[in-house]
Every structure is written in structure tokens, then in C-alpha cells.
Image (tube, rainbow, N blue to C red):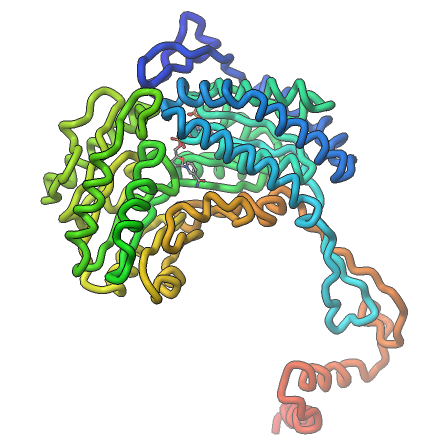
Length: 510
Ligand code: NDP
């Protein structure tokens, strides 16, 4: 990655401030052998941790949360300097990450409570589903939300009784190292949450290390590589990948609110969010007014500085992708209302509003992951839904509208939808978070997020013996006849006599 420079020591990586290019700190490059050693230590911690009661784990995780809260300034400062996000967004990220820790602790016991289920025909059985920790979870995180996104897996994995080995992006390793330092000081088991650092090869080593599950957040291309590496040992994977989230604005939407939400949803974290609003479909009748509102909001934003609304892009490689999407759209006829490729300076991109866009353009198909709002005029809601669903991705989505908003939302093929708000699903930690298609599979957050890091066990216990025991070869001679009757009675039309007569005729070749 362009923003990571090698230091004089090849065994270490430098983390750079994307706004200034200054070195914020360095971290070691862990080799596959070192990753294996870390995983082996985590396995010992996992065993001890899994033996504790929910209450005992909750006590330690709460102490961890409080320790992180006590370091909030330091964490936010690291996020600001290492990732480039402004102060406000850095504190928001710390707050969201701690919210997950609280949520996960609060719901682990209920989410993992054994469930008694119907035993169906085996009425003399007691049927139970129970959930157990997997062991060691490998978490591979991205650079855009280097604390909150991995915490969406780490918190739930720990609360479910697992140990965690976390590999952060090479662009943002320092925040992860800080997290592990605080964890080591807080937990009685210092190896419960460990961090390995390095480039992609360290992540690949973790995927192959024999952990019990990999929770990966990043691009679809890397997600496929992780899945292939994990396949060697049949290690299960949870993939939280990219998105091309649509927003639909219906004719009867509150346009002021829709425009404000659109601007925040598309531009928060300088558009470097997997659930950013990446494309907008607006009803013909309100298109021009909506565009006007959006442009007005965008022009009020401050770019750069500690107190800016948008910070520097974290990686210059991402700046190049955004510029390519803008150039492609303009060459194919898009109109620039504000910003544009000429307004890019170093790692700063001026937020850009485009109209006259269509699905032949990269900006409407590929993940832009930058501060760009492409707005397409649509003739009907059916057209908007069709276009919204015309994507290989399916992560988040947004609908603004009147009475029909909820039914429009139901027609969108995505893992999550916010109705008359933006990113609401990401702010509610009890809602499962994840996508379909190229956006990945599996769910973090909520009860599903806890159970992602457990193995499901089914137990069938015979409570009393009955004369008809199907789990035995010692059956009466007329058992096939009885079963034929039962099949018809239980699963067919219930007319036993007719069915058996038919069977006799069939057997006799009549
Ligand atoms: P990448 O796919 O480039 O990297 C993600 C992580 O994988 C990094 O830690 C990276 O390390 C590591 N990695 C790279 N190569 C390998 C490998 N061969 N084996 C194992 N690990 C590897 O994604 P980005 O960091 O660029 O993150 C941005 C992407 O993440 C966007 O597409 C975004 O949409 C998605 N995302 C999805 C979210 C979701 O919840 N669905 C949330 C946030 C982001 P290194 O950086 O050191 O190369």
C-alpha cells in the first residue's frame, strides 16, 4: 500500500499519517511461525476462558470496556493520526466500538441459552439445542474503521467464550496494538486478545494457522483469497466485504431530511465505509430539488483540519480508484455539480456530486469508497428498485419515502435497509450486520453475531421407552405395512386403506 513506507528495518512496518506523511509509529512484521505461536498461546487462554461462567466473563469484559473508555482520548488520537479521520469521527468510532463491547456482554448468555425444541414424532425424547465457544477466532480487519469494525467481531467472539487473534490492516496497525496492550493489562489471561501485525502475508498465515474460525472484513478480492487459504483446513469463514449501497428517494419523501441523510451517508469517513451511500435513485418529479439540496449541504462542509467534516483519505491507492471512477463517469457524460477530479489534492478529495449517471459507469457499479454522490433520475419506483438490485453486492441500502417506503425497502435485495434514516442499521448493535452476494456472508452484531462464534450442538435424550422403538433392528414382521400406513396418514392424504390397496395392486403388477 502506498502510504506504508518501509523503515530501515525490514522486519518492521511504519504506520503513516495520511494527512501529513509523518511516521506515527512502527510495528513488527510477524512471520507465519510467530503467528502459529500466538495462536497456540491463544488456544490455552481459550480453554480457560471457555470454562468461566457468563458472569465471570462479563466482569472481565466490563473491566476491559472501562479501561478502553479511560483511554478514549489516546484511542481517538491514534485513529485521527493513523487513519486520517477528523476528531469527531474518531470519537464516534471509539464510542461505537465500546457500544459493541457492552452489547455483546449484555446478550451473550441469552443468545447462547440452550433451547428446548419440539421432538416431533419422537415424542418420548427431549430435544435441545445448545451453543458452545469455538475456541480461537482469527479476526482480520480493514483500515477504514480500524477499531469499530474488528470490535464488531472481537467483542462478540470474546463474549461467546472464545480467545481472539487480531490482524489489523498494515495501514492502521497502531490502534490494534494499543487495544491488545490494554487487553493484556486488563484480562487475567493476557493471551486472550492478541494482535499480530504485518502485511497481507501475516493475514494469510493467520487464515492458514488452524484457528477455529476466521472473521474477515475487507474487499471481496481478498475475502476470496482468505476463503481459499482457510479451505486447506476447512476453517469456517465469516466474510464482511464491500458494498455498492443504493438509496432510493420517492416522490413523497421529505426532501430536506433525505438530502441531509444522503450527504452524511455518502460522505461520513470521507465515503470510506462499506455501508456508504454509493448511488442514489431519485424520482423524476423531485430530482432537481433534491440535487439542489444535496449540493447546498455539501458546500457547507469543511474539508481537512482536526475539526473538519471530512479528513484525508487513508490510502493514496484509494484516491486513485476514486479519480478513475470520476474520470470514467465524466467521459461517459456525467455532470459535476461540485468537487470533481480536478479538485483532488494529495490525499484530500473534495466531495463530489454527479448527475446524469447510469449503470454503464464504474461509479454506479464498482465500489468507489470515496466522497462521491452519483444521483440518477428514475421514472418510477419500479425502475428505482430494479436499478438498486442491479448489483453483485448486497450490503446496506436506504429508502426515503411516504407510505410506500416500507414496502420499497422490502423489495431491496440487501442484508440491511434503513427507512427514512441513513445507516440506522449500523447504529443499532442488536441488529445483525452483513450482506449477500459479493458483500459476503455470515452476520456480526446482535444474537446472530454471538452465535456466529459458537458451535451448535443438538442433543436428543430419550426420556421414556415406548413399545415402538424405531432405533432398533428388532421390529415386528408387519412393520413395513405399519410404516406404509403411517406415511400416508402423517404425510399423505390420510386415507390409509386406499393407499395400501393401491400398493398391493402395484406390487401385483395390476
Ligand atoms: P483489503 O481486502 O485490502 O484488506 C483487508 C484485510 O485483509 C487487511 O488487514 C489486509 O492486510 C488483509 N489481507 C490482505 N491480503 C490478505 C491475504 N492474502 N490473506 C489474509 N489477509 C489479507 O481491504 P481494505 O483494508 O482495503 O478494506 C476496505 C474494504 O473493506 C472495502 O471493500 C470495504 O467495503 C470493506 N469493508 C467491509 C465492511 C463490512 O462490514 N462489510 C466494513 C468495512 C470495510 P493489509 O492491509 O496488511 O494488506
